[in-house]
Image (cartoon, rainbow, N blue to C red; front, side):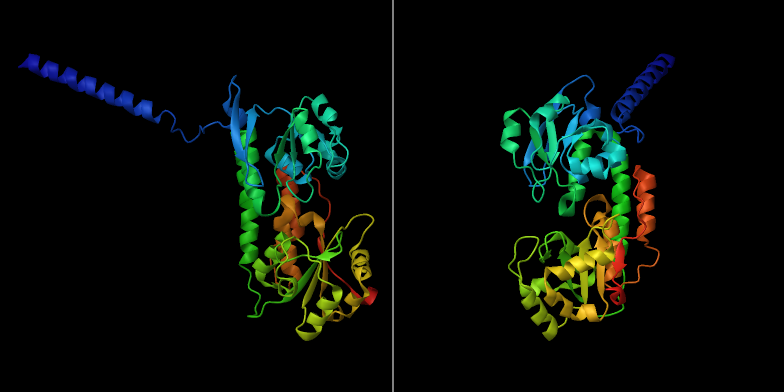
Length: 367
């Protein structure tokens, strides 16, 4: 009887040990503190490739590790800083360097964004160039590719912005995920708050949004028109020129004025540059210089003209742009302060934006 009991105990012990082995074998990777390493971080000493999706929806295969990268896209440069990998940038276009000298002042200058020099790119040890896919894309891609330089088109603004951010994380590794998640949390929180604002009216204001540098109003298909309409307004250009497929409309000032006289345009929003040279008032004057007929718009006599700083209307700060657009449409934004949001952005991600005002109601008495 004891022999049987002894054998039974041995069998039970074997089962327990085996079960424990199976448990630890199947749970050793379940430690919540140890995440799967991806991109550059998941290589060890190996080389491999990763496939991402660019802003055009095309799959792009990239060789890892990516230790050096060049840029002709200022928004991508900003996201490199947000992710904590700005030190991997070896060259950038002249605009990016001039706008972010505290971050990229020491990298090589590629000149104009549209035609970066391939020899300069290669001289830095990089074989990858990140550029935009559309509005500010490069014009010499075939030449660069013939030199062995890979073109990666990530806009990092507009509808693909957060998706493009995910592609950067996929390339540069899981160590960047926490910073990406932090940015996305901030961005979505502000946007959701703006979209939840109550206008206090059942009627949507009608607006015209002027892209000052192109001297054209935004079409209903543009990203800024979509944002403004999502907050609760109607773009008059969508009524006047509904078939436009580009981001801006060629509609004439005469047609806009006729519509205004018959139906009314409640708000005029102007995308302008506010810096040491240009002020909101000077940007407004440029708007009137586009066509003298604009002086007769009802929104001007009503004092409902707003200039919004371009810095917050595209790229990583466009959640601040949501707040500014809401203010221009007449919403009470409460605790959503554009100045505080930008300061928080500086503190969190190491930027040095020193502006405190981003939306300006034009003083008609001074005009």
